[in-house]
Length: 367
Image (cartoon, rainbow, N blue to C red; front, side):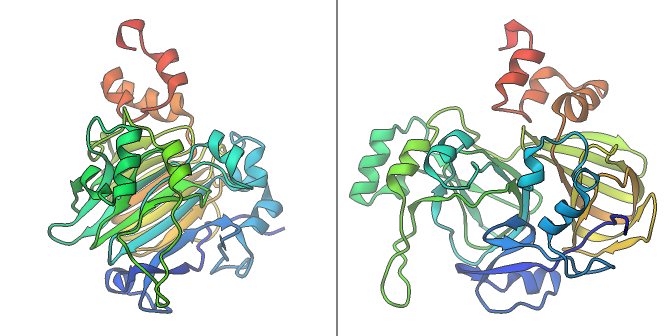
């Protein structure tokens, strides 16, 4: 039987009314059209399934790999549900115009209202942003549900949207319940739960070639919006020095962790056999050398799935990589940050929304 190796996949391109040609300009890709808004880099969803692009398993789909290798691919630490539904989805989004203002449900609401969809928590790394670019991120402070409902009815919702200027390198945590949209001239790498559940609140009064607007989902959106306690700015991240580089932990929740690896030389990584890694080369170029088998080159814009059974691997090169995985919060996040002197309050900024973590790890005086 062929041993699992680092898998690269053919991108799945999605045309969008707000898309463009930025992926060709940024990464030199050959695009199938002029309105490409999304590239699904690593996906196993009914709306898009990744196909292996290289090696002896070229042509196999990601769900086929899961069936073929099981926990050798996924890792020993993931729940059994991961065998049925690959847990993460990695995308690159290119916004040539504003995306619809939208919100995602959490798992509980999705289970009650969507067929076969999980909730959706996501995070963005800003790859590129034109001067003056912004995102919609949350609502105006103290906005209530009734105020927003009235604003939608009166066509004045824009007055209630939180607008945040962005630049390349910013990272934004986008939990379920947060109103959001990419602005014009913004390209992001997005890691998310494996879900396509989207509730649109507002679509900038756009219509298609026949004069029809895209559907909105006002009731569901108002049901799931969290009107308090949401983030309002980019996450700062916490850095850990490493030989020939640094590891910056930016987002951590029960579904995924997002780290940035700044590398100048060689950096050692390990799955410990417990969880797969998703890597996206954001800048520069790297040779991924696994503990067995052939090396893989990662140029700028290249994504790769490192199976859990590749316990150790090295990244040789210079540049920046986004690393995503399903974390063990205590061991992968808390322990390394604590050992480098970060406080509990600083760590909580990364894992906002994890009530089980908050109760277990914080003294009562800090809850």
